[in-house]
Image (tube, rainbow, N blue to C red):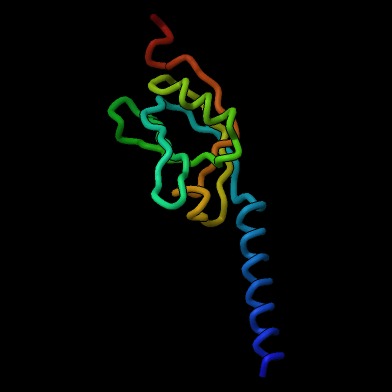
Length: 122
């Protein structure tokens, strides 16, 4: 009986490890989005995650929500600096969200400040 229980537990742990590795390392898509950085915060009670939003429209009707992994200190510093400015985000979309990494499936891997298209011709 102990041997069967040990095998079941081992199989469950291996399945969880395989699922986590797939979700963490495999990307569903990669892309870029531009907009005004309207929110960036460190939130959570037990597990703190970095979450942000950019507005992709003039009226703010198109909001893109994203997360940043805690290990990306340079990206976090840039996003805090660029608050309220127009930015271009390069992101990686995962197959599923992992709650202790972030609230979304979209994880920013690079950020640059851009000139707003609304004020380009002035």
